[in-house]
Length: 381
Ligand code: CA
Image (cartoon, rainbow, N blue to C red; front, top):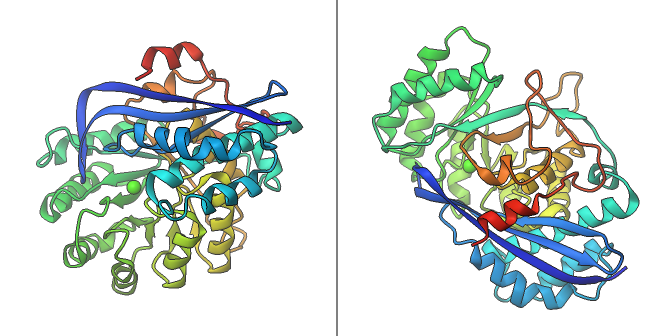
């Protein structure tokens, strides 16, 4: 079997109502998808993570100009070989960001092809499923004005709960006082309900403010505090871990085993959050999971992409060992972004569904997605 080509699909859809996270206003949904085709009629789907502020054309150009020539003609089952080829031959201008996101998309598609070739779900190729379903957590609480939205966000928490979510991640980083007001309002609204919370400031603060926020929220029993400081400030992460009581999470803006090595060796995180569309794909996710396991650090993938990235994340979560074995060990949870997103709901035949508070992990071959080509056409940039 040989790779014959890579089709690149850049999708965009304007948002009816722009929303903010701590780094800026998101005005459109975008995605960079790839379809790797072979001479045996099997094709595989992958996705390069497009962060809300990132033009999806950057990763598309990397794939088109830099990566395509490295993989066309190769055996798609050589996923590890091709990962190292793509990484090494882009090292001098890559290693991070959209170049590794491009590698991620192709790698994900190669695992999809391998699954379809063998007639097995990707988790089986990764060594089997530790779990067949996963608890999702609601990601939401974006801002539509910016500040002063505590009461609206408290109501949002109740909506997630009514939809079946008992874990939710609150977006913060809009000013420490505003953040605290939001958490107090949410705390009052959910009092007495079995709801666990995480917070995520998207590295909106420096160390002093990040510490002040963490100390103010010490009694919220947070499952984690995500991206408290900038991804480059590894010593800042170390300081958060030393001075705050809640687990510290990070890694969605880190890449490959080399990047995660720095976080893990420094003792910077309790929870590693590689995004499969950005860390280097499923192969890199595997490298990172092994490194994290050796450091006693939990892995909980980040996912904010389309239905394709979500499908890859589900397969990967199935095959993740727990970091600390016990009868009631903490299991990975699935990030379930609750903001409106046509590339999740419409793109595939079977989008994510919540059943009794859980998401089933598909056992169909490959990533288990069937892409609706009309949707590709509709949103093509
Ligand atoms: Ca995040």
